[in-house]
Image 1 (spheres, rainbow, N blue to C red):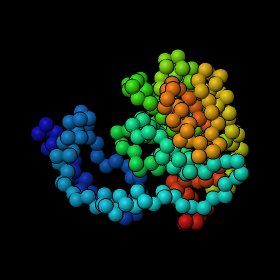
Image 2 (image 1 turned 30 degrees about the vertical axis):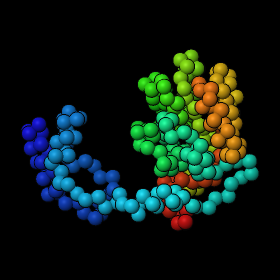
Image 3 (image 1 turned 120 degrees about the vertical axis):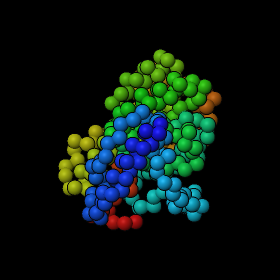
Image 4 (image 1 turned 180 degrees about the horizontal axis):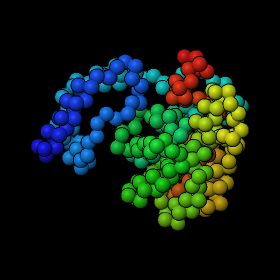
Length: 271
């Protein structure tokens, strides 16, 4: 352990001596390499780094997160479709606090991440290479590890359709998983980037799949949710019977997350 700490200190000294200019890109390449056991390496790093005072975890920041909407940018929502921000807000209010929440990847994941009341030990986030399509496998793993809990998977239509056949596995093993689909009829990140760059979007748009019907075809409950005011009753009914289900929310593809807007500032004016 002492040798590990000494090695880490040498790395930190070298890194400190290598000044980084203001023009260095944010995603600069790593300057040093550290090989260590994961736990011992983290412990050594923690011991070697100087302590610092927290500057952003303040009461004012906590109040801002608690009392302010995460995004107030104005979008025109088409008739018959939902605003994904409203869907996330409605789900946060309606879902029981002790349910296990799994947030997948893709454009939809930004909206689902805006649930500040949820404890981190009950909110699992997937960011492996930014790839979509792996959410259902993570949710199945959580459900298998915690069979006494209800697991909620937040996913997009593009991600879920990649492994939708696993609905049969969920049914066969009796896993307690509620799948929430943010269905905008497209690959969300791709369609917004293409639009921002003025490029054809045809390859990223495929229309609204009927996930409720697909779920019923695999032998589990499927519902198309069109009214957010129905959520408390739907959650109560599902909690009473358990099992697995897919709830399909048709949302507007006109709502662009702040992540995409920041990466294309010329297209989106600051709200």
